[in-house]
Image (cartoon, rainbow, N blue to C red; front, side, top):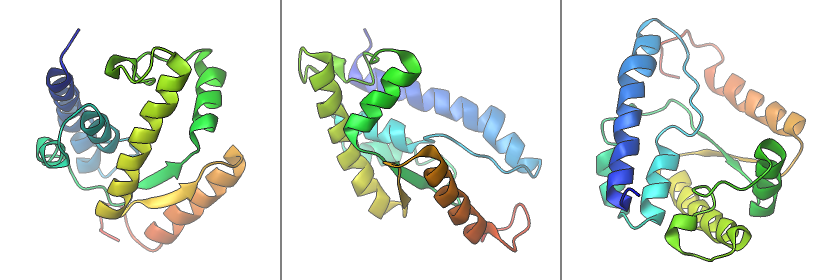
Length: 162
């Protein structure tokens, strides 16, 4: 079992490898890069597990600043149903079982996800996330995300800052 700091450092090293070997080369080739979660989930997980926000920010200071970050804001009960629909169970780590929030995986999941949500709420202001209500159908969420991306990047060539 890895300690909380070791785990955060492990995730940072994995991200640095992806940045160096996938993201930067793709951007250099003129490709638009879409990243699910990027550094923000890693930062939120580290903070919920005891790191300070300042430490997490310094740990990921090497990361490129995204042109756009969309935060899909979802109720915890929907997250649970979606996890079951996709995986058939609740993951140990996604449930925060390592934190000892509860012996019950469902209760731990709710508590852990709420702690993460509070961090994402803080980050939304700090990093200018565009929030989308994702408590709706995938079609409605897709429509909103598409409109945000189109509005943000319309009239810009790849590689230009909007």
